Image 1 (cartoon, rainbow, N blue to C red):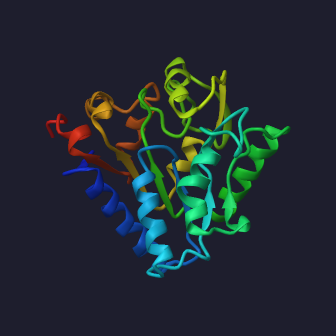
Image 2: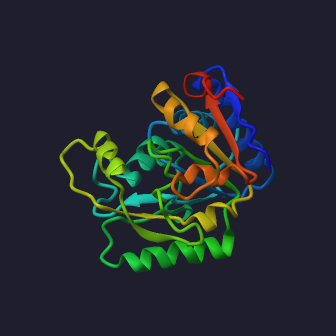
Length: 242
């Protein structure tokens, strides 16, 4: 497929377009499996979905949530963990039940079991809707530059860039060197995928993704020849010259 990203006026317009897709999916498939990245980028989408749910405009009571990734060494109680952000930004506002949530526990004693559980869930149910962000080094989930595209969920070593950037999420100093993530092989099998890229800080990596041939050294580029949709706001995508 040809890389044909959509560039929206602003972050609000990007979030609205994504929310509309999620609503259409859940309306037609109430038991859909959703997998969302955490952090600043997808937060507006989660906020809008929670509001619609609370207003009774859509029923999310039967969806299932599969986690994308987590830092190894932290859990829900740690401000800055993926679990904490997902619960605070989305799960609590949506009133999801415990049995709807299937995310990684970065503080689990047996991380191999966490990997096995994620792989088993994916093998049984797949992913109906996948919302991704892009790291400053182009990583997808925690699939870092140089990763193996043929892997399922796995434990990874964090790149120096990721270790530096991740500090902004934490209220205290952390020394995290590993992550746990769904593998690229699984992400490519999602039935519907959107990569959401917003903000001026992502303009440089956006340009690299647009102009670089697919390579595992820049993970996001491997999605360009798939059915993935790339949604940019003006600040991140106006320099793509497409």
